Image (tube, rainbow, N blue to C red):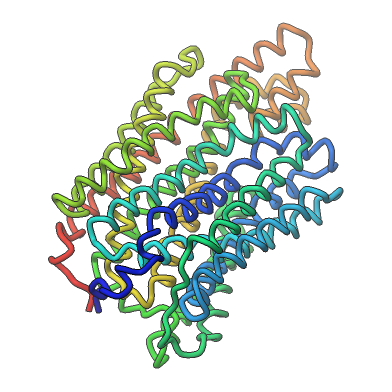
Length: 516
């Protein structure tokens, strides 16, 4: 199987002439999804106060979205292939906006969690539609590479810009504004999309594989749930292990079902193609490192360095510089030498950015080390993600673009959830060990809070006289920075392994291994 050659009639149509305007609408939709991944994190303290939410409820306000999003991506991608990708995009935007209003107007944590779950459904319809429409509209391989570079950059820009947007909103409005901001963006994308985005679908697609859809949803939900719960429950907890085992069993059943089904939702043979499977691994590892880093960098900037949410968000924003400049450059290189070398280079750059972070001390502050590392991280993401995405999508037939896009998006979500779970576990264990001596001087309840998190240490210090409070804060800061540098080293090693995998097994050029 290979991507169909350019359709002459289509290439001269009005829809095709508007392909760059179409990309603008898709980019707006991507910024919406990327921004929502991080914008709400800045509102957590305010939500805790205004809603009376517990720590567990706050976690699920964030994670309910991820759980629904990751679990439904494959099914949503297949649905878009059959019934129309423009329809899927429009439906996703409507659901996303409506659920955002519902969540913003809620007065209790349970309702916000329910609204965030529905937002995950909307996101699952939007995300694969953007890339599959792009593949259908951009028929020329050179233009498609440039468009995918923009697509990858815009997804990252939304994630990088979320904290700054959230910080600004919270300085001027209530916590619900972090959700309400989605409404005008979704509305603009919806209105422009009706005019500028062409409909595309697989007109030969059989009926939707409902058993495959159910198995993929159940398996991915169980896996992501286990990854979300693992840092809190522990990796050896019976519930965690049971959920992982159940997810693996269900996903194995999904593979067996798809192999025997005459019209599978996801042909598992795709994974035998190194142009598909190796870059999918690369994308997984990029998001493993990035989403884990986003968590502890936010805590470092706001707690150790004392920045406001807006100030912290602005210091993460230079990530976008690397994405904007690196995206087009990466695809230009890929056009000349193939996807392998820019992917390897991007993963290596990511490792360098984490190596820069390992030199952080309590006294080093944000610049120049943090600023340099953040910009380098943006370039690394751009070089790794754009060419890897082009390789994944170039390995699937155009008719299956929605499913191919959904796989690309699913590995992002699973990689991000895995990164947060593993890297937070490393961070917490090193922090607890480092702060133990200082916490031993405290009453039992305060000691437990200080060992649990740096925020707990700050809260405990607030109940102490000035001198021991200052000593505890200094010890907590030092322990957190030690934990952060250890965690960045682990993240750097992981992406270096990804670079090695791409170096050894990713074909240099598309013609080296065509999909069969």
